[in-house]
Image 1 (tube, rainbow, N blue to C red):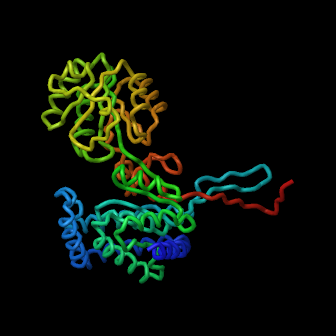
Image 2 (spheres, rainbow, N blue to C red):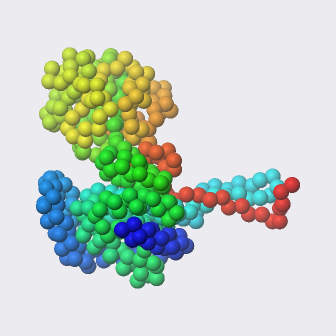
Image 3 (cartoon, rainbow, N blue to C red):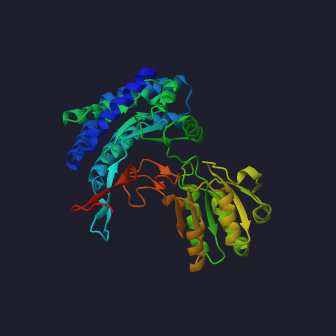
Length: 416
């Protein structure tokens, strides 16, 4: 197994040189042909997916997990549309971020370049295979993909389609590779290939991400969890605050940019919390509050200390009354996960302080935490959200899958 993994990584490194030099028009052609091929091979994909579903049922996967695993007609259409959107995005490779002239006449610039070989380790949903491969390919990277063991046959079928499109356009099929085995030991071998792989991106639950971080010899871009807060300031428009909180908690409670803790200024708590609780409880949200919150919301359960800092990923919300913006920001600094934080306020100076002082990959003013998403921020498709500050912070789209090198243009200058 170790020899197989090492050979996959070696071939990906060799293929990375070809895709790095590939013109944007050819990369886009591969992406568009892959999108068409998904429809042409729909039966083969769904036959492979049926094998995975059978395996998942035997393993006792929940109905929710089986639903995520299922490749429906709509899933294939969505994957194809995603590839077309990536093809339409601007290619960052070769672009110059900035240039300047030195006193000695040297022209200095920074050029966008691919990262090299990106390893993606993720769970369940087969569509991630196509999303990750498409984004990395657009950025000029080779990719090694290791999806969940329950999606092995689906992922292999999708990988063969992408590799076929690469080969038919004169590129190495190994630009996109998939681990062909289920054993977790294969992941450990993969995480030791630091000579062939430049970056690892885990996408899934906190357990998976911690496993990757603890065992990798390769730099890892990650976020462990999304503990997102909304702070309702005393100057907030309370109707707007209610709408924002409902969207942040209820629209999709199981995602990383959903609100997990509501912080409310003590001056407006007696007005805001009863109205907010009425709507949240009607939507099925369980409220776990501090003593001041529970006094205003009879239906709320007393919050345990661990509830503040918990990523519930469910219709559960921690609630705390705070003295003001300083206590709100202190709470966020102690319990947040550097993912997404929001303030609802009509005070410009407080919004500026919140933006400047809160440490998160996205800071929102008078809007929902749910907007921390590549598509919603105008970046197009994304490979995930990073709460690591090196080398990307926030949603990772095509540009974040590149680095930059210095380019220096001279006319015979020598250093004195």
